[in-house]
Length: 335
Ligand SMILES: [Zn+2]
Image 1 (tube, helix red, strand yellow):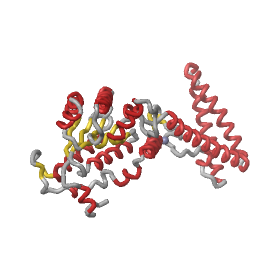
Image 2 (cartoon, rainbow, N blue to C red):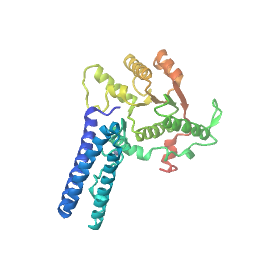
Image 3 (cartoon, protein in one colour):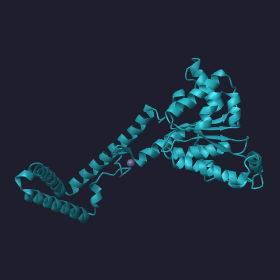
Image 4 (cartoon, rainbow, N blue to C red):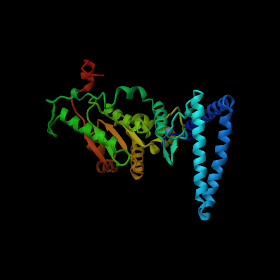
């Protein structure tokens, strides 16, 4: 996870405060009831005593064959609880009034159910990741629900592939959705390529949103920015203003490198790219690359070893069509 320790601790403090508040509010209600209906306090004390007795009887009772005692205590507690509830109702209170009220009843504001993160904690983490990713606004506009396949023409046919832009994008969308459904159980990398303005970034945004909604961390970075950050670190400029760091590129659940090939390619970028891709392959952490380059361009511009890593470990998705930015600027889009 790319949540830092301090971010995680921040969330845990929120949960602690929730529990504190729940306890504080309960104490206040208990006090109120005890003042109004003193008998309730007596009942509560009797229940506590009986519960302790019952536990003792369960611990030691089995061998002594005095299970009856346990049963009697059980009945006694039930009768006391019933008396308490009746009294509460008579005074116009719901029996729930004396129970703690949690924001999340499932995990009782602990954030965990057993060892698993509760849904509420996962969605709180997502919220934070969204905020930090700076993607919140763009993802509200660009997601699978707003993807408009009608922008892809049925008459625009790729000669090599022999399919129309429309049929192609339907298939590409299916693959992208499958990627998100199966994430992270199925390890897959995507190489999304095609001309400028055909919707590659939109597609990667759709994926980013789905993955973040599943509470996994996504780092979305343009190739230019990524190499900038890597070289700043490499050449000792420190962490600049960077929201992302080299560690994030390595550790995040999904890394999306946008617009590969627009950066200035040199031996540094080439070896950084190889290290990044290779490291994540070894850790089986997915990468999505979007680029104007074909896989053969990758070989000639970067290196044979980058080419072979990508060619043998990435799913190739070609996107094509008329330039969607032109179509979009004509106002033909839904969004
Ligand atoms: Zn919860």
